[in-house]
Amino acid sequence: MMAKTPAIQVEPLPALLIEPIVRAALAEDLGRAGDITSDALISASGRARGRIVAREAGRIAGIGAVEATYKILDPRVRVHIQAGDGCDVEPGDLIAEVVGETRAILIGERVALNFLGQLSGVATATARLAKLCEGTKARVTCTRKTVPGLRALQKYAVRCGGGTNHRFGLDDAILIKDNHIASIGGVEAAVHRARQHAGHMVKIELEVDSLKQLEEALSLKVDTILLDNMKPEQLREAVRMTAGRAMLEASGNVTEKTIAAIAVTGVDLISSGAITHSAKCLDVALDLAPASDSQ
Image (cartoon, rainbow, N blue to C red; front, side, top):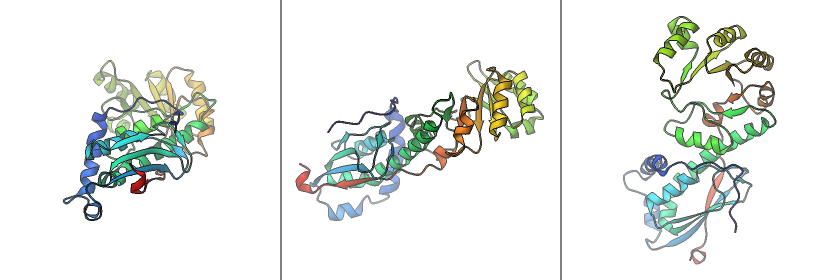
């Protein structure tokens, strides 16, 4: 069987980033005594072939976590990928085969599927929004509203879905929001302080929630302006006022029902927290073949 061709090509994450997260998940699952069910029921010499399949349509992300799971548990287990990251699948499609000792396959089953289902859910949610933006220049981007501990993996999944990444943390860009402005006493003071503090490679983004604030932001020549919870007609006017002088990011009330109207206004980016914090896991499963079929 030939492997599927990805709908989008994404550079895989280094194993160095994936393995510590997977190792922690395995330790959580194995607890103090390991898999006492498999130890009791499965022969130490037993071998099996597991088929990881899609139970619903979606975009795959997280194969690296599946591979890391079995590499940590038993390097002799082989993972044969049929639908890798960035591939679209339909119900019943084979994602990967896992061949090796039965105990190892079963011990890693839940951790591997948890990562694959969660990350594929993020990629699927992102792909749906990205498709609704086709024909416009708007790109879907994520936020810092990620599951704690999974940010690097979830942001990778966003890329698998055809989206782009916003800042990864508080340390790689300056984003001045309403509470910062309230604390310091004004937009101009906030931008001035930010410029004094920022290194020459650090960009500054400023959040505004009105066209009047947008005028002030444009006069301060920040790199990016976040248009918070503006209606499409306001976004359209913001694009006209900006005339390419700054990158514009629309945020707030972004759903599959609203994103097309936002995209056609001409904004550069549309950010969504839901694609990471509320994405529905893709339904994936692992089915073991009879022992006679696993040789």
